[in-house]
Each structure stands twice: as structure tokens, then as C-alpha cells.
Amino acid sequence: MKGINIVVAVKQVPDADDLRIDPVTNNLVREGVPAIINPPDLHAIEEALRLKEKYGGTVSIISMGPPKGDITLREAVAMGSDNIYLITDAAMVGSDTWATSYTVSRGIEKIGKPDIILFGRRALDGETQQVGPQTAMWLGIPEVAYTDKILDIDMETKVAKLQRTTEFDTETVEVKMPFVATITENSNTPREATLEGMIKAMTFQVTRLSKTDIDADPKKIGLAASPTKVIRVRPPPKMRNPEIIKNEDLNKTVDFLVSKIKESLKGMKAMNEAYEKPAPVTKVEDSIWVYIDHFDGELNKTSLEILGAARRVADLMDTKLGAVIIGTDDEKLIDTAFKYGADEAYYCEAENAKRYDNDIYTKALELMINKYKPNSLFFPGTYNSRELAATTAIKVNTGLIADCIIFDVDEKGQLQATRPDFGGKETSTIICPNNKPIMVSTRAGVFSALPERDFKGKIVKEKLGKVESRFKITDYKNIEKTNALSVAQVVVGVGRGIVNKDNIKLAEDLAAKIGGIVGVSKPLADANWYPKDRQVGQTGTTIRPNLYIAMGISGAIQHLVGIQGSKRIIAINTDPEAQIFENCDYGVVGDVFQIVPELIKKIGDINA
Image (cartoon, rainbow, N blue to C red; front, side):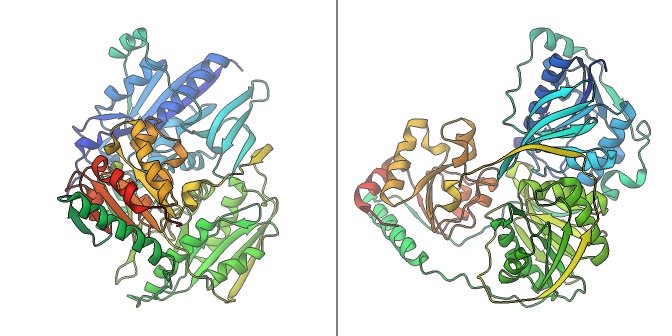
């Protein structure tokens, strides 16, 4: 074997400041909108270039986008890539991840199936994390998600050794080429373009491929073929009914904040989160399912949260809520699912399924779906669940809507899922009208688990025969840590209004007074002003404290999604138009540097 043929699939994402939506299709208008290479994909390009330098071979870039996308893709040439392929055809406009992954797979087949195909872990404009795993399913090759490192490649046996990391563990995995891997942002630091590379990029000829060139089935491309449809795009919804004051008298402002902080902390401790069953809007026959994610025999708490969300949907549809569990000797999880909202449990016993294996779990879930045909299937937003949802959606030919924050049901029984989109500037409401089951996922901390109850329901059991996995786990280590943000009862959040890194101490001093910890917005985490595990938001940690105080935070949708589970939100910001004031309980229009020092002096120590 002489060198490695590597393909990196790259997405072009729009500049969020130039965002435009087509009022007819509700899709993003890409023509004429400045685009960049999706930043997480730069890590995939860097990993490919490192492999080329170590083992020899070629690095080819493939992308799907508008005709002028070649301008954006030349950055990859400047970094050191050898070939650029742009799939561009008007018939492909409006593709969802199902249709996109099919199209990318056809393009890869056209240019010659490579040894390794790399994707960035996620796309910044959509946060779906689906196209990599789904492309692998179309190609019929294994996929290793959340890859931190490609440790070694045996050039004789064509076996690669990779390290993948989820929120729960780190695994060393062996897989035979060809394979797909999604590369995490922790894997490397993308290189800067060289002067020689930039000169080469200026005149580099990008190869364009049409739907005819890649022999694409017209029934599988574009908006018409996409299982999911965007029915509405609108600004982030108002989530609370705020009481806002202006800082016209500092003493009165501080007294207002002290009273609201003490009132919030006292009242929240006794708050009752009893479930109020909604009146049904329709009647459907097929049940709603929740995939129960578990690790080392313990049910993941995010599964309980999404059981709560799905319980409401099942009640709106006047149907049963089922929990689907895959594992080996994991029947004890059935009782937990019943305690937290499930009416039925569907348990698939599978050999060698004690630890998650995408081949085995996808086969098991496909078996259960095809036999029992649920209306919808909800997934918690854990790493393994996201991957499983993506691969299973291709196997059962349906759509997948990721990172949902709101669920509703219309009078026809159609599930409507709303998710943040386009860099958090808008929210999109999406349906899957013609394919079942409708698949959706959400993030940890967005919804609440139901109160525990004493209940036993119907149990359905299946057995999956032996499945030959294409993955060999040679080592693994559990991650023994708890994110302090996820369990904190009081959080003081800091945004760009804090001006510089040293000023974060002001938030730390306030947090110390009220028994809390500090969290930061995404820009501060990206700037390394505070540890990344203290980032609050959709792309950081979603939180559910008794009290959240936002200092100098504007309120981007990805941040609002991360804090919407907070029982009380207090905001301080100089901008009266800041989005945070539409999504807090109490707000002060004023300068944190005037208000917070006085607040710290006056509030005293609180045992929260």
C-alpha cells in the first residue's frame, strides 16, 4: 500500500451577520451570502494533512454548495490539500441531512472510494452532528464518531487505531479501512496557510460535479427528497414575562436585586414541579418512544429528561409512551423508565451490547422499529445517542431533527419540533410529514424529568442474534468527573459586557456571597478567559439552577437554550434591547461595574 487516499468532507457555513431566509421555502439563502469553511472541519483537514505527512498519500476536499463555493474551499488548498471537488447543482438546494449525506456519498463514490473519510464533529450553523455517520451508512463502511486522535495505521493490514472520547469515557478503537471518522475540536490546532499555499490557491482549478456527474438518484436529492421540512423560521421565542427596571437610583436598584435574589433562593427550594397533563389535541394509534441511553448499567439522567418531554407529546396525541432499551443484562432499567413516565417498555437483549457499539445498537434499534412501528422516537442528546439516531435514520429511511428545544402537535397529529438554527439567530420549526418514525433529539438540561411514581407497565422483549461488529475496543477508561455547572443550584453568568478577563473576579466575588459558581458565555470560553467546561449554552453546558444571574450577557439563542431550565433568571445589562431582557424574570438596565460591587457589599452571605 503506497500512501493513504484521504477525503475530507467540508461544509461551507454562512456568515451569521449576513443571514437571509427564503420566505417561500424557509431555507437559508446561500447565494450571495459570504461563506467560510465550517470551523470544526478545519480540524478534520489538519488531521488529514498530518496523516499525509506521516504515511504519504493525497488529501482531497469534497463539499456541496453553490457555484461560488470554490472561493471558500481554496483555503483548504492554501493549507496543503491536493484536490478540491465541489458538488453543485440547483436540484440539490434545500437538502436536509438525509439528502445531503446521500449526495456526499455519491460524490465520494464518483471520485473513488478512499481509505479514510474525515468530517468535522459538527456544523456551526446547525449543530446536527449527523452527516458524517449518515454518509458512512450510505457507503456501507464503519464510522468512528468523536475521534480525538488517529493513533496509528498498520499499512500492511490496513487497520487503524483511533481514540474516541464521549462525555462518559475514552476508548481506543481498531477499525479496518475504509472508514469514516468525525474529528473533534480537541484533536489538533489547524495550521495557518503558507504563502506558497495561498499563491497556489489563487489559480487552483476546483472540479465541479453535477447531479449527473455523480449519478445521483433524483428521488434522493434536494428539498423534495428530504424527509424533514422547515415550516417556519422566526426569531427566538420569548420564554418568560420579565419585570425590568432602569438603574436610576443605585440604592433602589441594589435593594431590588437583593430582594429578588433572596426571594428566588427561598422560594425555589420549595417549588413543586408536578406534571400537569395537557388535554389531547388529536388521537394517534402508534406510540411515542424514547431511546433510553445508559452507561455501565446506569441510566443516563438525560434519558429521564427527554422522557418528560415525550410524555407531554404522547398525552397531546392521546397515545402510549414507550421506552426502548438495548443492552445485555440491563432489564433493571425498565423499572426506572416506568418510574419516570413510560407506559410501555421495549427491551432488546443483544449479545456483546453491555458497552455501546454502533453496529450492534443500530441493528437492534432497526429491528425494534421495523417490528413495532412507533410514531416518533425521541433521543437524549448524548454523544452515543446522537450517533445512533443518525445511523438508524438511514437504515429505516426517515428524517432526524436534532437539538430541539420545543415540541408541539397539530390537530392532524403531526409532531412539530423547534430548534435553534443558523448560528442561533433564528429558530426553525421542522416536521417530517411522510416518513415514520419521526426522529428527534435534544440536549441535556433542556427539559425536566417527571416526578418519580410507582408504576408498572407492559413489557415487550426481543432478542438480537449475534452481530459481527466492525469495531474492536482494545482499551477504555471511564471519565470520572461531574461538571460543576450541571449540578450547581446558583450560577452567576458572565458575558462580553465584562470587558476583560480580570473583571471576571467581580462575578466570582458575587458567586461566593450567594453560594454559587461562575459560568461564561461562548465568546469568553472561546477566548480562553475561563475553563471550557464552564461555558453555559447549547454548545456548552445546559443548566437548571434555582437561580441564574446574567452579567453583561446579551442573550444569543444558543445561550438562552442553555439557561431556559433555570427556575429564576436575573439579568444586568446596559443595552435595554438585549435579548436577555425578553427571557429573564427580573432585569436591570445598568452597568454591572456600578451595580455589582454595591450588591456584593449589601447582600451579605447567603447559605444557598
